[in-house]
Amino acid sequence: MDALLEILASKAPGLTAEQQLEPMHALWLRAAEAEQSPVKSAAEGMVADVQRSILLFDIEHFSDRDDVEQAYQRRMLYEIADHVLVAAGITEAQRRRADRGDSVMELIDASASLTELLRALITEMPRQLLAVNRAASSSVQIRMRGVLATGRVTIDEHDGWLGSDLNRACRLLDAEFLRNALQEGTNNIALCISDSVYQGTVRHGHPLIPPESFHRVTFDSKEGQMTAWLTSPS
Image (cartoon, rainbow, N blue to C red; front, top):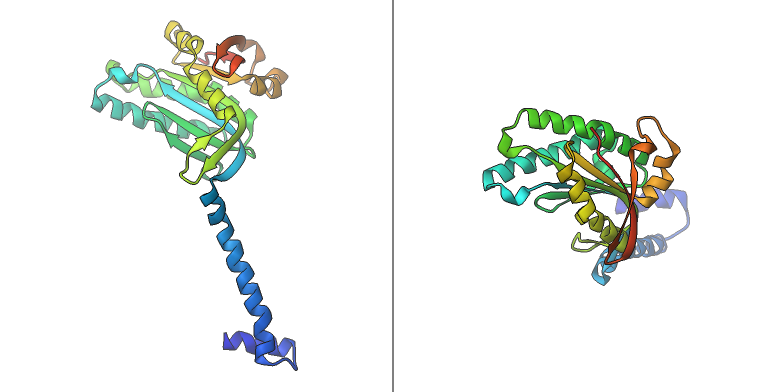
């Protein structure tokens, strides 16, 4: 502190030590208040309200496996999700993960390319699933449902995630039409995207994201009638 006062004195000759200390003390108090403000917001509840891409994966028939098989499938789920996001150019700083046992939820920063993420889901995801299943016994073969949506998500002081957009994404993951598409199909993944993702990205026909491979689905949910788009990448 003494050294700092000497420097200030050289910049403002004629001021006493007390006169130099007063503005420094005021600055110190403002800094302390600023540091406390996020804590105060956390205590009040809503810590962050953010725009994110919402990516959900769920393993088919997970509960039918024993503990050893489930542990293996969970490791593979994490590895597959990581490979897909790396292929999409998404960094660790741009993603936030929540574990749900047989499923995983990823919140992805709005700065990450939604087009690249879709492209990775359509091209890299099937490759990763094929590679994992080729090396696995029949009892731990992995087939997955996936959902990609966008919207606002609130993250609270307990790292809980909430919001109507997130609720709608979860409705898509649990929808009967998506379960049936995976069960009745021959591919290892059934992918559902929200109408906003289709209208904002897919319908424009970006390379390796063919709009004709998606078909429109409407269904009733707790949030009312919803529209989504379904595909089964191979």
